[in-house]
Amino acid sequence: MPRAPVDRAVAAAERTLSILEAFMKKGGIVSLPELERETGLFKSVICRYLLSFERHGYAFKRSDGKYQLGVSALRLGKTYEKAFDAAHHITPLLQRLATATQESASYYVRQNDLRLCLYRVESPRSLRVSVQPGSLWPIDETATGRIFQRFSSERPEHDILPEQGFLAHSSNIGQEETSSLSAPVFGVDNLLMGALTISGPTSRFDPLANSEARQLLVAAAKELSREFGAAEAV
Image 1 (cartoon, rainbow, N blue to C red):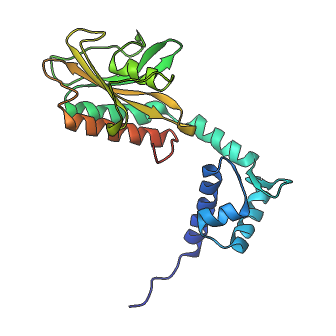
Image 2 (image 1 turned 60 degrees about the vertical axis):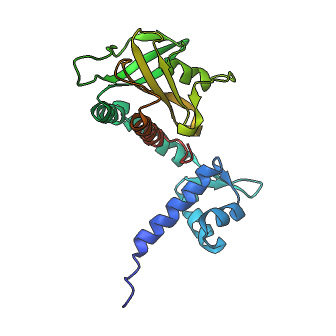
Image 3 (image 1 turned 180 degrees about the vertical axis):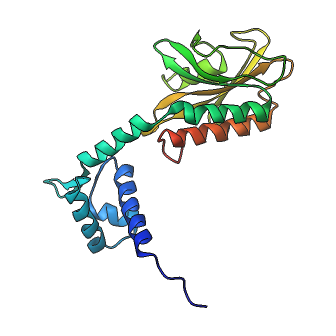
């Protein structure tokens, strides 16, 4: 059976992206041997691409022989930042969580020494935990508070579940008859961006027994972290 013809334009694009990914993996400064190892391309091929990178301002050669991302790469990143709509990524994800778990789903960010409920989708059930978007809460011993404590200090947290992507859980803390499950969301350089939280009445929602909710929350936090630019390993 004859091989399908190679699309040279696609192959060139794949090589370009693999070189850019190698730059990002190495913190924006990389040597030719490192590019060879990371991309699997021959040095002669990489050099041809780097010439184009230099012409268009995406990289430049340093005095030590290494290559560094250039100002065009910065402009590309800034353009992405301007176009990025957090609500467009977060709200549908919260809606999926609320529908799948039948409990309320929220996204919190840190604001000084408090946590801010930035986005929220309420449970479709009549009995539910109600929190208003825009409300401020202390960074306490709730599941969400523990996420912010865990990833902003060296304090050990015995209620963090590392085998489930550093999930935190709590019951009857902050609000009576409320149980919560929370996961961290990371961004560029794997810095903490916020926390995804599922919460419901304690009589119905058990964070430790509900393995489906834990799996859904871990998957959602990883998905959002990727959207925010976190490394794949997170």
